[in-house]
Length: 134
Figure 1 (cartoon, rainbow, N blue to C red):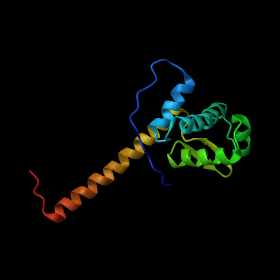
Figure 2: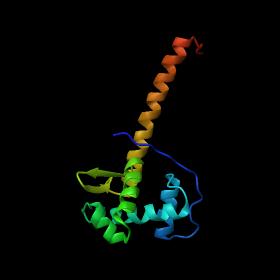
Figure 3: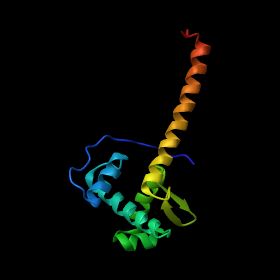
Figure 4: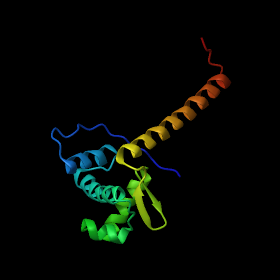
């Protein structure tokens, strides 16, 4: 599965508030402006809640739960899948890991593998281009 990981450094909310924390989380993954981050975080929050109960949800049920149009929900679901935060199985969506922490660890492992591939390729190109190694 291909996905694009975008990470934007944002200041964490100063006080503990789950909605602001989720908004920050979504903005940090590149879900643009505040209104879009809030929309994405509403969808993500419901997926997380259902995941904690062992449930997967379809876009129609999600739209009803978050009081948004199905089209808007599908747009956010596609963005969350593209970022590697959630997975789609058939017509159902779940958090990628068993928890938010597990999902972040999965993304971290993905990035480590990608950077290992970059490093290997860079060494091969260095060698082919004649760069001296100490």
